[in-house]
Image (cartoon, rainbow, N blue to C red; front, side, top):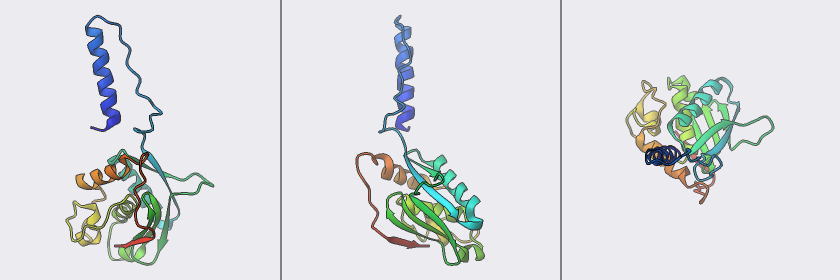
Length: 187
């Protein structure tokens, strides 16, 4: 169970127990500003992702549905984004500069070969979130990438991939997990 959910459940149980014992209880507030429980916000700029914009937004939403330690949000106008997402004619790839920072290239070559754009987006964002390729691999592994074949359209990380991202960002306020500078992962 995620720490935020656990804290809320524990507070409710304690309040109910106290009330049943004859005391007056009020639900203990869970600190909204508790930085240890807040997800790390990573912004992305998909303005140069051309026809892949919807796939990029869906890939980010999938990660937001899947993990709690990090939240991917579109950058506001004028805001410098942590992740830049570009469309090009090459193969999809990610260049990470640090955990949660880098450039994703949504390459048309893979799409022309029949690969799913949302899976590509989720996969490449997975690299920025600190995950390596796991090739060859089954379709159930998002990070198996192209080795799962063109019939694979699964854009969701599996339990191990989710856990790894949670671990990468779980202590993001107390440590800075670095990915090697300018590491390029070509899928």
